Image (cartoon, rainbow, N blue to C red; front, side):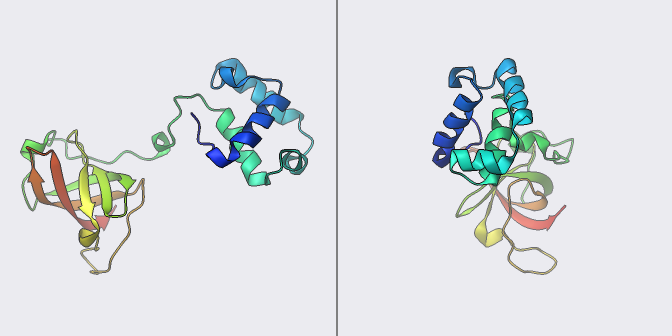
Length: 167
């Protein structure tokens, strides 16, 4: 229930035990506070990493993740995209219309973009070329883009986009 990778679960459990805490209290305010106190009592991250048989970056990630509430969402730290205020649902979209949005997910076949209509649109890999240069571009989660509506299928809830530019 955290950003800790499964390969580090054993080290995280050892960490929690060393802090005299229980996994069942994960994410609770008192648990989070005690993890902070535990970290301030550590002489060195290198020593702790050695005791856990992991690297310092892994110890840092574990400590950071254990000090966050279970409702923490990394994406909340990203800037929100600027949506066209008069467009609120798929029915208002027209082929060729320009929209802005934020990339929420990237797959092997394309990227899903929140354009503010309640349904993510998709930029297929074949449509990921910057319009001004024509060069292919691989989108990343969190990027804000301007795109053109390529197609829409209301019955299937699908919106296709063509990448114009990064914002």
